[in-house]
Amino acid sequence: MDQKLEGTPKATLELSGRAVTRSEVSNDWGTRLQWMISRDGKPVATVGAGLDLTFEHPDTAPGKYEIVLQQFHYVNYKKDKEGKFTESNYISISDPVSYTI
Amino acid sequence: MLHIGNQYLPLCSGGTRRSFLQVGAAAMAGLTLPNWLSLQASGAVDEKKAKIRNCITIFLVGSPGHLDTWDMKPDAPEDIRGKFKPISTSVPGVQICEHFPRMARMMDRVALIRSLHYSTGASHENGQRWMMTGHDFDASNKQPHMGSVISKVYGSRGDLPASIILPDGIGNTGTTTPHGQESAFLGSAHQPFILGSDPARADFKVADLETPSGQSELRLEARRKLLHELDDAQRHAETTGTLERDTAYARAFNLLTSPDTKKAFDLNEEPVKLRDRYGRNTFGQSCLMARRLIERGTRFVTVNQFDTVFGISCWDMHADGNSLNNTYADYEHVLCPQFDLAFTALLEDLQQRGLLEETVIAVISEFGRTPKINARGGRDHYPSAFTNFLAGGPIRGGRVIGSTDKIGAAPHDRPVEPPQVVASIYQAMGIDLETTMLPGPGGRPIRLIDAEPIHELFS
Image (tube, rainbow over all chains, first blue to last red; front, side, top):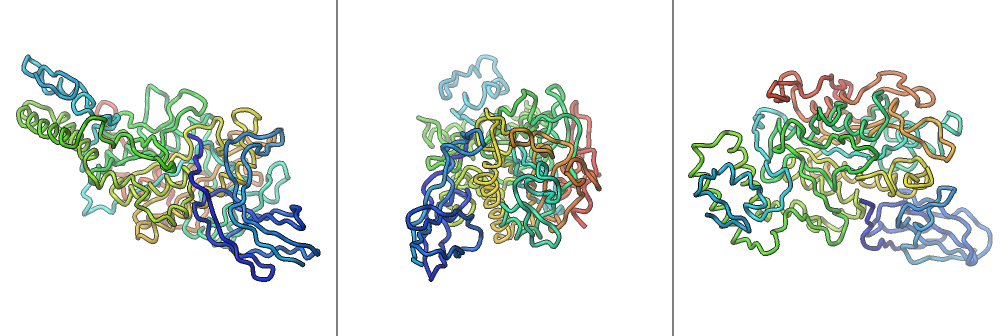
């Protein structure tokens, strides 16, 4: 039987300066978590969300930063020629937080 | 003539109670219980005298590459060491894959066996037979699953089967040869009960524990009384074997009617946060159910992480671009994180409930994967070297048994073969391998396994 991921994962974020602290994930699918960082509306980095609940993006270039927690949503295992998933992908599981440098 | 369910049983016209039983449970009581119906309480061991432990076996169907997980070679060439990096663990000098951060913190409770190997073939089924039974064999000479052996040696506790497989039995993994998850010559009395349902689904239920449509509890009770009357009338004429079946039928009724038994399978009784901690996926919820079943009397639970290797995300990382197209992406985004979460949740949960000391956890697989990455970026089957691990019970954590050479191609020291792992599990569960025998084919007494346990796991 293929993996069934029931429900929708959710986390909340708190911002303190540039440091973002996440809650534990409710309805955790168990798949990989990552921080997705955008600057002035454009994605600039994704960083694996490790066991440390707090994350601070090191980039200090001027701009408006937005950070959101994402989790991998496994739909099926279809992939492209490079072996990357084509239908399964990361989805945001928190509201974004933002700060300006 | 009796009318039972939809069947007419001619007991008054020369038929015997044996023929009645042969009609089958479904005919007798409208039951849909599968072939483990003949569960037997063998009572072979006096629990008060022996230190009996339980076991949860996690079978990583498809088999992780040892070089990508628990036997990393960061100094090897790129086409051997692979994509992932090692991280330190709570045990100085022991490193594992970066995608197991929780497990890294708990390595002091885990004993890695890095020098496993065998040479009888490289099919999934070969490995399944070796690791599930300690033997290799063909369909004409089947050997029993570890859970069936435990069922025979220890019997059942309470109404739950002694051996349960979650969430499903292993299906198609490439060939039609046996998988090693049957009771074989131990008979149907010791066949593992297969859940056959996904506990991660919101509409999950154990079909075999549901009262059949149109069968009220009252009717079931009436049939139980009828069974007892038949027992009384025929008892003197029956053989011991049939009397064992009486116990099986009683268990079948108990499973259908006992609220406690049904509760054992009800994950909704678990706190939401704990369900999240295991991971809201098929594997994670199966591990949680394994703990519930052990807690409530099952001796041996097998969690098959997958029931096939085709067309799903699993450890079988051939990257073939077709139905075996698992790649590093599956490991990184799905498989390693889900395993890391569920395995460590199980360790923590058992420990917090005081069950880890009496529960052996065995994480096993069919084989390793080729040291050299193939032309498509995957790794293929490799039984010449692989890593499995044990925890819980009397297993001494923080150990690494054996090692492989610089590229993970062969054992470098302390080579270990699958029967030694099986022997170690039996010993960890409290079985004296020198004195405990099984009734083999034809009733001839045989040893549980012809191998020595891995003594370093216990000292």
